[in-house]
Length: 300
Image 1 (spheres, rainbow, N blue to C red):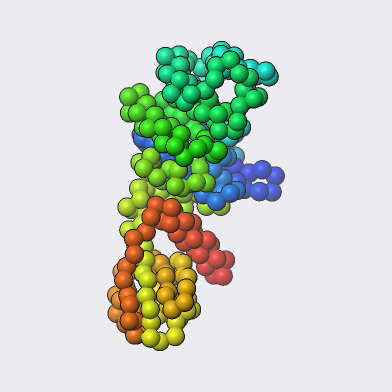
Image 2 (cartoon, one colour; image 1 turned 90 degrees about the vertical axis):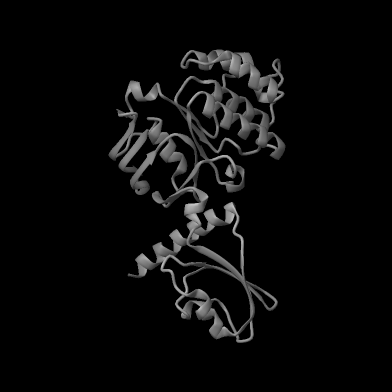
């Protein structure tokens, strides 16, 4: 288990990670948040690249900056290093100096990803380079894999193959994989749990069912005049609102378990029905909720 306890990391006047508490257990974990939320900094702290200014991070009871902890973790940054003028063989041999790598798995993935062996990495496209380092990551004999924006630039069809391999190897080799991404759709049907970081803090974590359990999305046509302010004045916590013609689309966070439809009946709806919320929207709504709570605290 990765245990993060009251961890804080500052860079000059900016606090990138603030008093963060989080436990990461087995499985595939999706780390999401807006640009600048602190995702990359957090992964570097777990990997021992950065040391927390306050608090502690433990990897299976070892402090993250110790040799024992670092032997358990492989961190793939968004721009991984490759020796100058190297091909696949040279990349493998370089990383083999520092890590135990399963060559059979590596060769199998290189073949499956259809990567040319005798071409310099500098000639690879962005997506091909990503695939090479994903293959390397999944071949390293480490318990914890930290993949920072690893899916950026991948073709959608190739991405599905990558996700299948992550799930398979995670299960077969009992690895824990933490994948950060700004693309929530890419993580859908891959991760067991989402961790949402907002402004350097843990906003929320859990599977999609738990993250979206208090959100209700409606589409409606009202006989009475209505806008977002009207809905808010009914005591409803509006997370998103859009109007197209006479059709209102809005999402309510009903953690207070209000009788929403009774409130909406005062607007004389000629149409009122709930709509399914997809994974991407659930995560975006959680981010919107975090922003809303921040503004509320600032006013208070």
